[in-house]
Image (cartoon, rainbow, N blue to C red; front, side, top):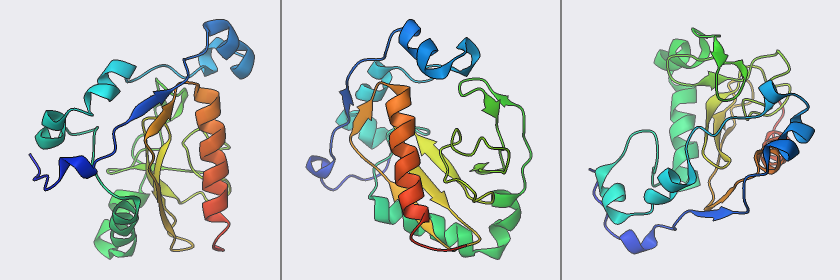
Length: 182
C-alpha cells in the first residue's frame, strides 16, 4: 500500500446523528423510490480509520489526501487534452440504483448534465459539463471545463441524514461555483 510517513496526521472519520426512520425519509423525499439507499454502512466507513486500512490503500474508499491536492489533480485532468473523451463523453445513462437517477457516467466520472438532476449527482446547478465524484458523507470533488474551476471539499464528519448531507453539499457547491463565471 501507499507509504504513510505520519499516521498521526490523518484525521479520523466520525459519524454525526442517526439515519432517520423510513417514515421521516418518506416524508422528506415524498416517494419511496426517491429515498437514497445506504450503499456503504457505518461500520465499513469507520473501519477505514484503522492504520492497517490506511496502509492497504483500499480502492474506492479511505483515501488520504488534502483537498488542495485533490483539486490540483482534477485541474490536471481538466487541462489535459488527452482526457477530454474520458471525462466528457457519457457512456452510461442507466439508472443509478442507490441514488435513483440516470448515472451520466464517463470512463472516469459522473457528469452533471442538464436534466435537472445535477444536484442529485452532487454538482452545482447550471453547469452541465462539470465532472467529478462525490464520496461518502458529502465529500465533494469536481471540475468545470467551462470556467476552469476545480474544487474539492473533504471533511471528517459524516452526517447520517441524507437530506442534511444533500442540502449542505448543494450549498457548498453553489458557493464554490459562484467564485467564477463560466
